[in-house]
Length: 102
Image (cartoon, rainbow, N blue to C red):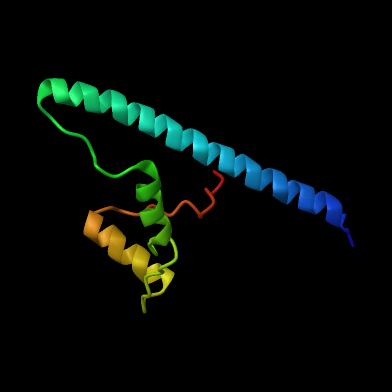
């Protein structure tokens, strides 16, 4: 059984949290800069820019259940494959058979 040193583990977690925070700060700064540049360019052309910031867009994605919701189906895997193949008009080829030796 392999044991992990607790101090090492907490140092790793602390470094990961700091790294993620720096990355978020960088992305926020970069998007604000780009937003300013695009905004100035858009004004010259008579257009406009997105009103929401990077943080607002990310917060909306984080709160959504896009990745957590699972579609429940009563079909098994073979039925799902058959339905998909039929809808797409595909023809399946059985590659599991071994070629007979001549």
